[in-house]
Length: 145
Image (cartoon, rainbow, N blue to C red; front, side):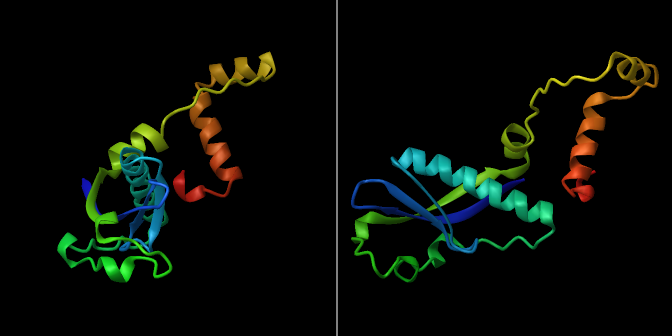
């Protein structure tokens, strides 16, 4: 399912871009270019929503783009010109993004005694699953087992 949230883009004096998600506890990121800032915003949005879902916290409803008060959201210490601030809707399929980037498998090599390897193979043990479960337990992530 695609999630869509408004993001406020601010062009900074050095022509980089700051991006703030007002609905998500003022979650922010930046980029050297508008394109890079957008890529970072997508990653930031996906990561934040993924973490909320994993922790069971409520996911805030997005504010409609036309209801965002840019002036209220801009840092009062910065003197942005009107043309330096825009609101853009950022969308991401969090589940697909997580599959591609957050849950991507990483190959690990390990060493165990041959006798232990032979016994484990005879018992039909899935080494990858066993290692994942052991790491989650060790890291107190039992709810993810």
